[in-house]
Length: 225
Length: 225
DNA sequence: TTCCTACGGATTGTCGACAATCGGAGAAAA
DNA sequence: TTTTCTCCGATTGTCGACAATCCGTAGGAA
Image (cartoon, rainbow over all chains, first blue to last red; front, side, top):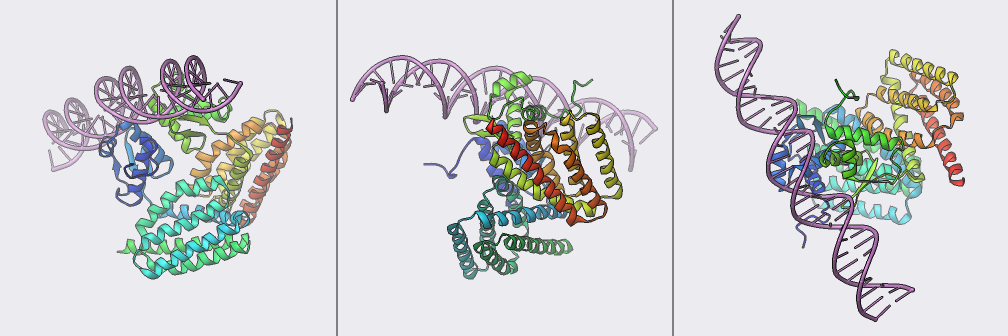
């Protein structure tokens, strides 16, 4: 019997996953200082593996390390998020363009199934937007995988993905965007099914631009309050 | 008095830089196994910092780590490079589009100065293509910086940059491409000067596509030999 | 001969302790 | 009271040693 996590790996990997989760969920506040000894103690491991984990998170841009001054959780200011969404727009657009060529019919129909489940979730309870967010990320990642471009999968999957999730947790519960987002997803899948890569790319880019506008406005309101 | 390197930082950082350099220059062959104790010995440090360095390089995708089986230098096969150039095409295209808006006139004229030096180098000695490569990377990075998008700078500057350089070292000395490349660079700067972002993006994408074709053909010839 | 098994060397993963460095509290002088 | 300097606690950086794991090899049985 394993404790909880399916894939254990090395202790440093475990620490990296746990830290990433804590950061993404906001359990560790932005800009918070990360004390090595403290964290190692709470994770029940030595400082060696923890330091390796911090190096890993630094590569993921989840923490920022300063020599002889420790590591702090990254702060997602407006400019950072703006830059992130800009990059994401072109990368996911590219993924759509490729996916329209590379994905099998079966994979595309699975996307529709995913959206059906998604729609069902929205109908049942408008509240749990969290699961919507995760489902949305699943949708996006499935398309990225469909591009068959490993570099894209690495960039969008393992790395920026986490920043995205972090952002979602901060600015989530804007339930009013779930329905238009779902419709846009449907359109994208439709374009993929018709093997129209250019259209799929355009739709995806608009979709992400819309998401950014939504988040941007929310940050404005948050700042005003 | 410092030994050699201007920015020392922590030992792990030093090790990461030295390893990255050795990998990029081919001093460490692709797929070669990296023995921790051995490397730590040769660098005159303990295994702790070296392990952190390996984590860092893993994030840069220069090495691939397998739990309980050590780290190996990444292998750049055709598919990997193809994916890399695809991603690079859209990212650098985006950088051009933004740079046409964001760069100051002064910065753009500096780009021309850079190309002048570049041209001079080619005239003086067609041989040293290496410096051309470095100069080319400088040119590209200056534009990326001009985009004012920190995420782009991180992705293209610190990370993929290294893979690119690695690829260059392998397939360099194709001097027949230096001149058309220089002309394309000139065209791009011209588009930037006219603040025509769309044109600049298109030219950059074509430029990178051309570079990939050139490298691809070279790999074919290499494989045939 | 071939396949399975058990052993041994080598390598990675982990820990605890020591050294180096930084930030802040508190005392002394202006 | 304010400023500056010094010292001390805390934290990071580094090392050596020990434990866990894996790969290759040799040996034996079918």
